[in-house]
Image (cartoon, one colour):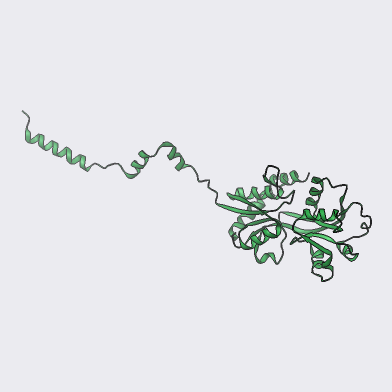
Length: 281
């Protein structure tokens, strides 16, 4: 015969043991309710871009331009993209004229402009990267102008009453800056918002020559098949180094330091040489 008292005691003891056993933890519940795919996603590294730069550009081939498919390309574009990729940052492009983009950089709605010259005025509102290439300006004239070969400088052109086309707010070196500041000599310069306008004005005899970056001028003449009409005079101006210009309002000193670190790294590698070679032909 079963001892009833003993059976009741065993049942009570079992109930107490079960009640005191620990239940599933919060982490166990989380693991049980998470699918293998979700667990893998949680374990994967976060590749979300750390920042986005708004890059202003105008058509300035071969440094920066939109190709026939609308893709933004060019020597400067590829170089800066290689740097911002290392920074884990993306680029949003904003197209405009140099004058309008320079104003937007002042306001902080554009973060960076490429191929910029460093001036005291610009340093009031902009930060500058380390130099990444040298700029050279050439003077272009009509091919049938035979009276110009003896002129050795832009000053010679101005002193002989020739009118020179320039792009507004571009820097052309100290000699041209001095002429532009002169009350008399400044009258011999005609400003436009785009370099391509100077080609039309030259062919229409509105100006006698125009100043343009040597690579850009050669590219414009080649693309428009104008080598029988427009030629480089031979006068060149070394305007100094080219920089990436950042808005002081929207870009921090820390970001500039990081940008310069990766710029130096890329310039010391084959990446830089390969990009330059690609656009030098």
